[in-house]
Picture 1: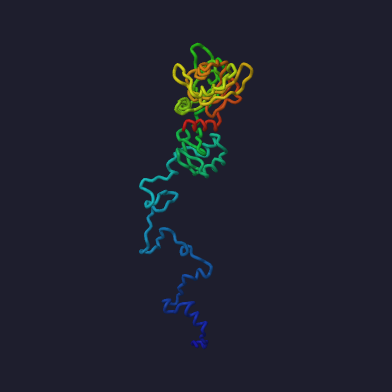
Picture 2: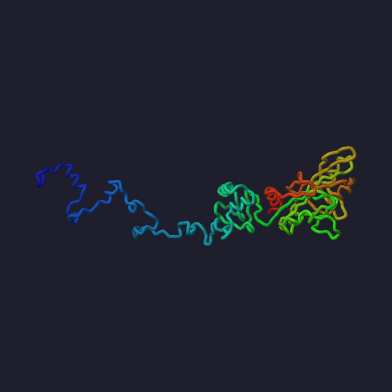
Amino acid sequence: MDRSGRREGPQGSSRARYGRRDEGDRGGSGRTPRRDEGARSGRVSKRDGVHTLGDSRRGAGDRATPKDRFKTARQPVRDRDFYPEGYTDERDTTEVPGGVRLQKVLAQAGVASRRACEEMIGDGRVTVDGQVVRRFGAKVDPAKQVIHVDGRRIPTAPDLVYYALNKPIGVVSTMEDPQGRPCLADFVEELAPRLFHVGRLDTETEGLLLLTNDGELANRLTHPSYGVPKKYWAKVPGPIPRDLGRRLKQGIELEDGIAKADDFQIVQEHGQQALVEVVLHEGRKHVVRRMLEESGHRVIDLARIEFGPVKLGRTKPGTLRALTLREVGELYAAVKL
């Protein structure tokens, strides 16, 4: 029983032991709040409940954490224990200060809408200079950097153009002719300057001729080491012997060396004339005419209908069209660009 006459029971004793401290422990009449009172009342101190990296309240015995072990938005530093000195993230090697956003470059090149291009970037389908770029805001230089989508190069330089011309019979495959004959300049004089014609077609041959100001692509397409095939249709007197295809593939001896066809087919035979298809990758002067004539078949008409992945299609003689994005990408792939 206490001085006021109340009897002290087990409950009161428990409250004294666990609920509050004695006067001596409080060091005076003022009450010192317990650390867990805020939690009991539903209020948790943010400072007490969260421990952040580099907390100043860390004890002296705690292990110090080097600042450069954690990558932040402002300091993209790699852990030295796992990456060699001088290592650079892929996302930093393709960035061009003041460049154009990658998704905008792709959209302007005709790949897809800007939203769809962002999805391609996020899926890792886009590379810049051989490195996968997944950042939507990555800035690139479309005139200097090489961009691929799904492994196919995309023409992004704004000043490069690519055309397919159906050259008519009687037109010279040059940009100017001293004799005043019709030439290629008559068809492209209003287009981009300094266009190159990829290969040649003789004056009496019609068909597909590529024109571009992409000098590197033009040089590779005409170099025999890359083996870009060209397909021709030739009208010759018939009938066609069965062994003609075998002879052309084995090689025909010409005055400047042996010429071999990559493929040969009979397209159509009608009466005393036949239409045959010859495929070869070299570009010697009049090579198709000379091969057929040497094998005993004079060429009546000759036309080139394909150059690598580009087809003449329904392009009328004397007209030209811009190559599609797919066609340009396939031309790049054909010459390993």
